[in-house]
Image (cartoon, rainbow, N blue to C red):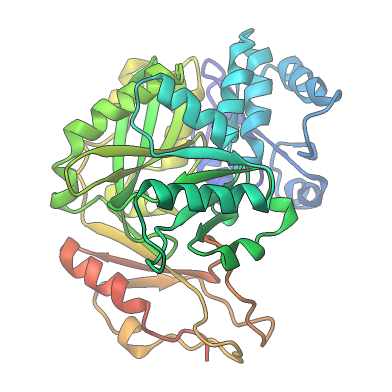
Length: 406
């Protein structure tokens, strides 16, 4: 598409073909900042490219910010968890606002994030930092002592989340034996009490501290399945959820960009904050939104990060939540149910269903299935689309009982 020199010039941090395709079809100039393994592909396909390896921030970190500034770039957009801190550091230079780097640190460090939320009057569960396994055992015992558990009663579980590993570092701990399975590289970590309730996620595009589009993603089962827009039962919480997102924008000082927070609603109607990310969600939610609404969520990211975006553009770009959805789009993350597999076999029950859309599964490269130790290690996604959210929920739940790898 023809690029408009009057509009912003953005840098995409991280390699995502979906994002690159979206910005290629958009009217903004762009450059991809990614590791050297992507360089040949970028050259062959005429993708504007700057090579950079996203190791830990170090004394060379300013180099990439200066390079992009000299190129005339207006904003850096993080596509993955690992590039959030880099985007904060780069945008601090591009915008002349050092606060943006500190803000990115809050989005990356889960303990700092929880403290900031608590300071802003946002309801969170009990949490603590852990530096070793003994800290985890102490927290598990203390939480269950507080809940007045007697000897022999099953423990209430706790959650352990590595500070900066996203869903891959998320474990549920119920016993002292579970603690022994934690790897050394998962520390330091955040410990949280378990919240019984309805867990869901929100995707909010923000500019000038205002929510420009808000989607509620309904988890059918965390780590396995999600669909958009949410069912009417969850959508009735939209006014409350919007208030919570506005509180989050205020507390975390978010002027522009995109946030992906997670919440719990408990049986007594209280809403608890789980965590917030400043990058696109997993489970291809952006693709689900495009299937349901027709707008491209990556292009929406560019609009929110570009300081030259106009009000008229925003109004013309976003649909009306829920009302404009053509149907419910959902996906299921497949994980083999057997320990040894030899081939991919899509169940006819799945493939023949009228809601079945397509799948992204590939034949197994190894026969032995590694033990699943955390969330986020699915082997691929199966997509569905249809009108009835209850039918979608049943369908996504049913997939858990089927074998895709045999």
